[in-house]
Image (spheres, rainbow, N blue to C red):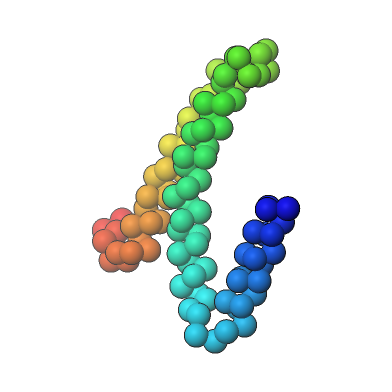
Length: 97
């Protein structure tokens, strides 16, 4: 019941933000995507650690090839999210790239 109550409350608040004219929807959209980009990296690292835990997954843990692919993916996403976050708040900082 608490989950559904909170879910309905958030739906109502989100609907009110869209209907009321004084909320800057474009700013909210861009900032929420920046927060998502920053939070994606710790979540992926947690899943990486969890998917290699033999106590939880037993024989179904990741192999070496998957771990290398995941490490490259996490590194690339980390760099991309840092660059995106910097370009969002300091747009002319990365002009030399």
